[in-house]
Image (tube, rainbow over all chains, first blue to last red; front, side):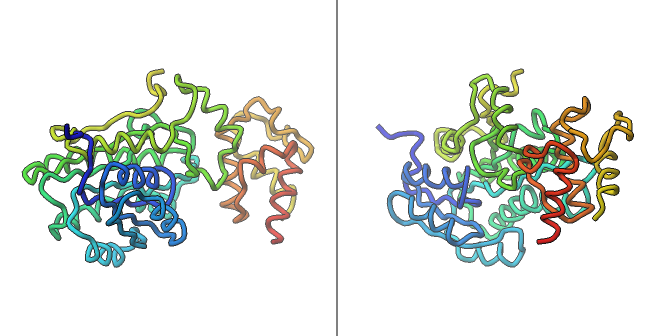
Amino acid sequence: MKNPFSLEDKFILVTGASSGIGKAIAIECSRMGAKVIVTARNKERLNETYSKLEGGGHVQLIADLSKTGEIEKLINELPVLDGLVHSAGLAEPLPFQFLNKEKLEKIFDVNFTAPTLITQQLIKSKKINKNASVVFISSISGVYCSSNGGSAYSASKGAINGLVKGMALDLAPKFIRVNCVNPGMINTNIFENGAISEEQLKEDMKKYPLKRYGEPEEVAFAVIYLLSDASKWVTGSNLLIDGGYTLL
Amino acid sequence: MEIKGFIENFASQFEFTDTSEFKAETKFRNIDEWSSLLALSVIAMVDEKYNVTLKGDDIRVSQTIQDLFNIVSSKLSK
């Protein structure tokens, strides 16, 4: 019997693939048979992800997607895609009264503008197949809730949720599906700058009904569903993955 | 950087606590109004005013405003 969740022979681009959720997505997609194109800024860390991919036919491309020139270069090097996962992301907790244009732009560039424009240019260059699936990594933050110092991050993720709905409509004639996943806190190093201490994270974990943060793989499995033919009739949706956090 | 100015900047993050409560030896975590949001505000204030990046752990290991001032000073001199 054919596994409806299989990604056999699908070409899938994963951005932000050098760490955290993106890394897990790239690896799990390769295990489901996909030919994965991984991209990120850091060569060494990207190579580490690449070396963990199972099966053959994968490609790694170094690119800083916040730079227009690099998006163009990346697009020229890409094969025609069956799937596209945007997992490059940035979180820098900052109380609202300290926001300024530069800080707002930095977060929006990475979390919203870059994934939006790269998809638009891929569509325009006919690098996305009919029946392909586009998946954005949004968040519970900005859609269901927020956190102290999270206003800019929430805004960028809320924007993704809106974008997904409009894109899903506009790309439906091409049978390209567009969805997002909305994870709660996942065990990654997204707060590696250390503004939030280890102690605060441990306290925060207790607020989750399932009593822990999620694992990157647990987001990857949801992304696999959205990339696969199992979700052929799913578009414009947001899939909540939060250990029950937003129930309370 | 002087301790007096640092204490003023620290105090200005608070809404309700009287400024007279802020001294170099004040144990800031004992102030009723202290919260995780104020910790983020102090980090952002230090970044904005002194161009120094504090970590959550720098705040966690500090007891008094003086302790925090010392950490900022040491990072400034680097």
